Length: 439
Image 1 (cartoon, rainbow, N blue to C red):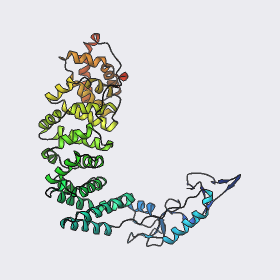
Image 2: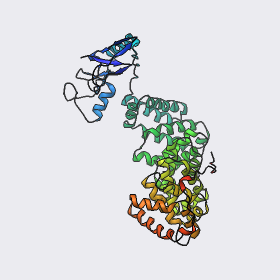
Image 3: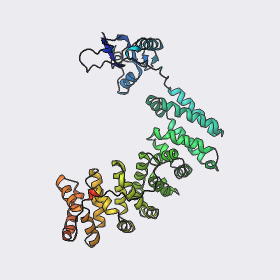
Image 4: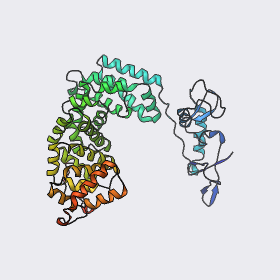
C-alpha cells in the first residue's frame, strides 16, 4: 500500500485521491512505507513500541486503545496476558533516517521520544522523598520533588502514571511534615513546600485521605501564608489547592478570608485561581455552619466592592460565581445594606442579566429581587432607568426556572407603578469606563 505525504503531513483516510508535493513545476508523490504506519491510526509512528504478540504500534495510539478497556492485540485479536510495551528503537531509527532522506520534500524528522516513566520509578522516588523528609534532608527532598515535576511536564502519560501510583498522597504527607516544623515557613523549607504545591495542582482531584491531610492545621496555615505572599505562581497554586480541603478546615484557619479576597481583588494572572477563590467563598457563605459570621468577616474586608470590580469584565465562569456570592451575601441584613449603598451594584448586576448565561441571569434576578422591595422607591426607579423592566419581560418570554420566574413576576409588579417616574436608559450603553481597578 502506498500513502502520500504532503508538507510533512501523513495522508488521512478521510481524504480522497492522492496527495502530491510540488517541487518546482513538478508534482512528486511521496510513498510512505506501510510498516512505518501504526495499525490503529494509519499515521506514521513517532514512538513505535512492540507488544508481546510481536506487533508494533505507535505508543500513544496503543495506550489509548488499552485505556478504552480493550485487552487484545488489535491486529492478532489475541488476549494479552501482559501489557508491556518494548520500544522498537531499530524501527524508530529507520523512520528517522527516511524522514531525513526526504526532508527536501518538506518532511520533518520525528524527534527521539523520551522513555516514559514507570510505576517502579515513581514508587522508588516517592519512597526516597519520604525518607529524606524524615531525615530532614530538605535539599535532597527538593531535588526529588522537582524530578517528579519534570516527569509530569514531559507527557500526559507520565502524569497519569504518577497519579495512579499514589504519589499525591506521599507529597501531601511530606507537605504536612515540613509545614508543621517550627519556623519552617521562614527558612529554606519554603522552597520544597512551594514545589509540592505546584506539583499537587495537576494531581487534582486528591483522594479523601489526601484532602483530609491537606486540611490539617499546619498544612492550612502554610497554604494561607503562601496565599497571602508575594510569589504569584505560588499564590495561584495555593488558591487551587484550598478548593480541595474540607469546608470545616477553611472555617478554622486564620487568614483564609483575607487571602481569598486579596487574590480576587489583585488577580495572580490566572483565571482558574480567581474562580477557585470565588468558589471557596461561595461555599463558605452558603453552606458553612457559621456562614453569617463568615459573611460578616468578608463584608468587613470589602468583598462587595471586589465582586463588583470582578463583574466588570469577568468571563462566564467567574461572572456566575461572583453573582452567586453576591446573591448569598444579600441574604444577610448588613450585606444587603452595603450592596444598596454601592452605586454600581444595580447597574452592573442588571447589565449581566440575559448577557452571560441562564445561571447568571437567575442570580441577577435574585439579587435585584432582594434589594428592590416595594418600599425602596429610589432603587426601583434606578433599576428602571438601567432597563431592568424590559429585560425581565424578555426573560419571562424566553423561559427560566420556576423560582426565577416568580421573582421576576413580583419585580415587574413593583416596577410597573414607577415606570412613569423613570426615564429609561439602555443598560447596554453603560461601559463603566471610570471604574478604577486596584491592579
